[in-house]
Length: 334
Picture (cartoon, helix red, strand yellow):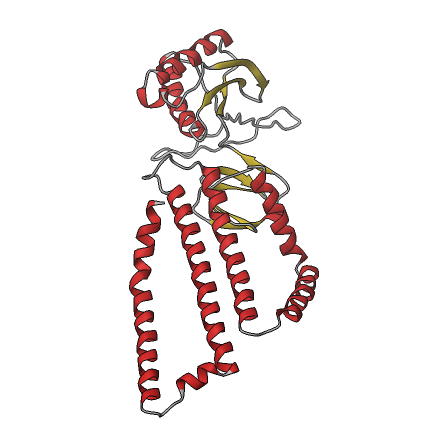
């Protein structure tokens, strides 16, 4: 663990400072005992002194072992998360290792406190019983939090999402910035930061698994020939794939599905492009730009809403008056 030595060296000066204070206290006590101001030897030989000295050494040993375990654990996790050492950790490994470090640190603190209290002469059996009753009461009073934690554990084991994934959770779509055992934090397209507890998550939609599709529903005028539209979309795709930057994001040929639906003013033709995960939106925008230019060059109409104005007639067949105001011209009656 190359990071263990670096992290350990940061604590050595602090340890030496505490060690010097202990030595100073021992020397002062020995000096006071030598001039008969205190009876250090008699105090250490007494039952209370022996018990206190034993407890101090035991507590020091417990804290030292717990500190070394915590130091080794955090150094190993940092080593696995550091891309400069070994292989780069995947998104799932980063998520699980971060959760492992947090959970292990909390468990280590609780266990260390129990051992320290036990060595200090306190009976921890009533404390454990009280903690059990308290935990049961908290479990009933905080059922929502317990549900969050249980659901979060299953979501992590099922690898439903990882940090950096684009997901839809609880009706919100965004990039996962943080995962805890209780909630997921998303950053949406507008930059808003959402914290969603796992108990409110009934479905996770992940857009970053294996591959992604850009689905193109292109509307053309009813007068256009579908075969010409198909060829134009294929040619636009080939032009897009000739771009070195975009070709690295495309995994397969354009899939042409044909006429998908008949709209009010357009025939909708559907095709899709298979992309590497997370690149489908950028590839789609680039393809739309190329497709618009190809349609313009080939005079293929992309329809837009038209409005026809009808002037109603009265019962005697006369048309209603319609006024058109033009600059520097009188009104025209029609």
